[in-house]
Amino acid sequence: SKKQVGVLGLGRMGAALAGAFLGAGHDVVVWNRSPLKAGPLLDRGARLAATPAEAASADVVVSCLSTYDTQQPVLEAASLSGRTLVNLTSGTPEQARVAAKWAASAGVDYVDGVIMAVPQGIGTPSARILYSGSEAAFGAQRAVLEVLGEPMFLGADAGLAALYDLALLGMMWSAMGGYLHALALVGSEGVTPEQFTPMALEWHSAVGGFLSGIGAQVASGDYETDVSALDINAAGLAMLVETSRAQGIGTTIPAALRELFDRAVAAGHGTHAIASVIEEIR
Ligand code: NDP
Image 1 (cartoon, rainbow, N blue to C red):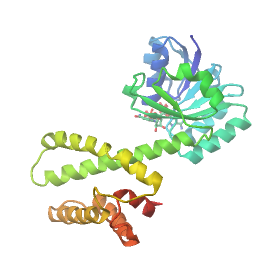
Image 2 (cartoon, helix red, strand yellow):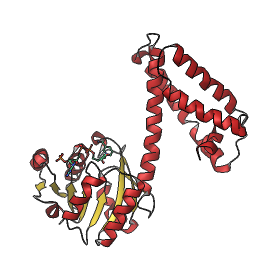
Image 3 (tube, rainbow, N blue to C red):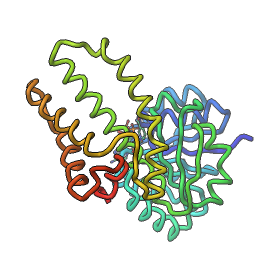
Image 4 (cartoon, helix red, strand yellow):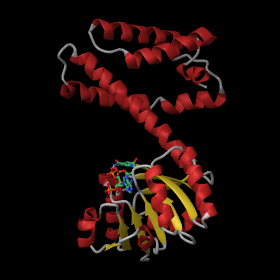
């Protein structure tokens, strides 16, 4: 059913969120520091709020500003008491918990969310959005939030969504760093990204297939392996560092992993599976 949705922040992401709410037929009121950015949304039927407080007259208020620090004065100006705030600004778990405490003291039902998608993906089933905080408020607004992408509620600790966000982004950055290192390495012999990328994609998906097994070993603490021992992999990393240097490219990414794997070998995990490296990380 049709609801009033307030959107604070019309950057790349906020504008996409407001557009998805409009597309689903909701009554959308938007606020942005630079009101000109609202133009295309107003053409589609959104109303422009002159102040954050005007946008906060809605049933549910979604905020998406660049950082928590820029957001807090906007939230305080919005007089959100008695409303549900869904905070989709990225931050740390600690920032989310502080915001949840502030919300509780201000009489605001607080849901913290993180968007695992780019603005162009908002409103498609591939957009995964993670939520934590008030389960009652999340449940009450679930149908509205489903418009943005596939929602998943993680728990009552408001910091959980940000924790998952950083964990998942860390995987993304590691994978992208590994890919860029690979491109530089094969590129040092004239191989183009166009030539290499199909193989990289195939390999990336094969590596994805290892994750459940690694996770099961971490869960059980049983690192016995008949697949591939850590010392062989540490030796491989040493070869990668040496070859990167010989090819005249940087070694930062493999050297960091090599240092970690070597420490795990020194701690006695040489004959164990790669999963045992978590002992060193912890
Ligand atoms: P943009 O830089 O496009 O937009 C930033 C928004 O913050 C604008 O609405 C801007 O207003 C507002 N803003 C910045 N400083 C202030 C201030 N001092 N006072 C009031 N408003 C301010 O960023 P995105 O939309 O890309 O990102 C927004 C959030 O969404 C971030 O936390 C980001 O991490 C998260 N996110 C973004 C993704 C993406 O792919 N873009 C993916 C997942 C999460 P103004 O228009 O006036 O400058």
